[in-house]
Image (tube, rainbow, N blue to C red; front, side, top):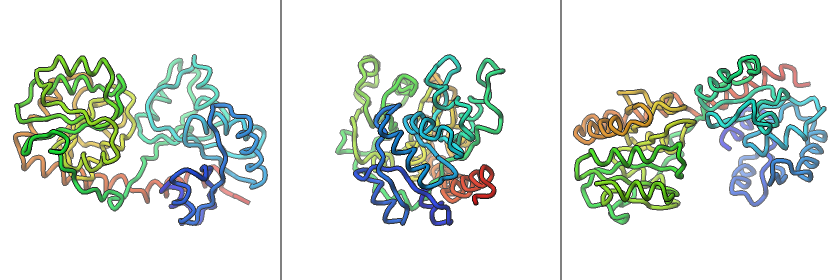
Length: 346
C-alpha cells in the first residue's frame, strides 16, 4: 500500500484493485490513489476476469502489477492479447516448479515481463531451478526489497506478565503461524538448554498437534507460552529481550523479524531464504544454521548473558532497517523498473 501511495506521490498514475470493504481502500483514497472494486475470490474467476479486462481496455494501462497468486492467474487471463506489460510480486522462496501446471499459469508463464522478488534468495531460486533449459530469462526476476519507515512502528511494549511471564524473566519472542517450514520445534528444543529464567513466547496460531507434542515433551515446557492469535503482536515483540525466527526454508523477508529489529529487539534467525539479508551476523543479530537447536541455544545464551551486546545489536538492528530497507528506495526502484519496461508511455 505504501508503495502505491509513494508512486502516486511521485507522479505515476496508479489505480489499485481493492474491494471497497477492505481496510486499505479508505487509506488509499485518502491519499488520492484511485481504487476499483473488482473481486477475484478464486484462481480463475470469470466475472472478475471480465471486469479486469474491461478496465484494462478502458484505461489503456501500460503495466499490470499483481501482488498475489489469485491476481496473477486471473490477471494473465484478463490481459491476453492486450499490449500491457505484466509485473508480479513474489514474497517467499519456492512453491514453484516446472512439473506443476499451476506454476505455468502463474510465475513461470512466459507472458510475465518481470517478477519483483522481495529478497535475493527468491530471485536465486528462480534462476537455479532444474532443469536448466526451462529456466526463465535472467532479467525476468528482479530483487526489490520491501521498504519500511520507522514512523510506522509506534507500539508501546506490552506488559508480558499479563501473558503469564514472570516479572524479570528473559523473554524470547517468536511471531508466526505454525507451519513445518517455520522450524518452531527446533526453537522449543533449544529451550531445554537455556537457563531457567529464559521464557519463550510463541505468538500466533501455534496449536498444531505436532507442536503441542513437542512442547509437552520439553523439560522447559513450563517456560513456553502460547498466546494464540492476537491483535497486538508488535507490542508483544517490542517487550521481548530477543526474537527468534527458526525457519528451515522458504522464508522471504518476514515482517515479524523487521518489527523486532525496529523495536531494538536483537534477532536470532536461520540461514534460510531472505532472513540473512535482513540480519548481519554478529552486528545486528545472529544468523545460525537451519535445524540446529544447539546453535539457536548458543546465540540466545550469548544475548541472555550480555546486556551490552543486546543493546548494541538492538540499536544496530533498528539502524539497519532505517538505512537499508527504506520505503523510499522501494518506490524509486519500482518506478525505475516501470520506466525500463515502458520507456515511452505515449
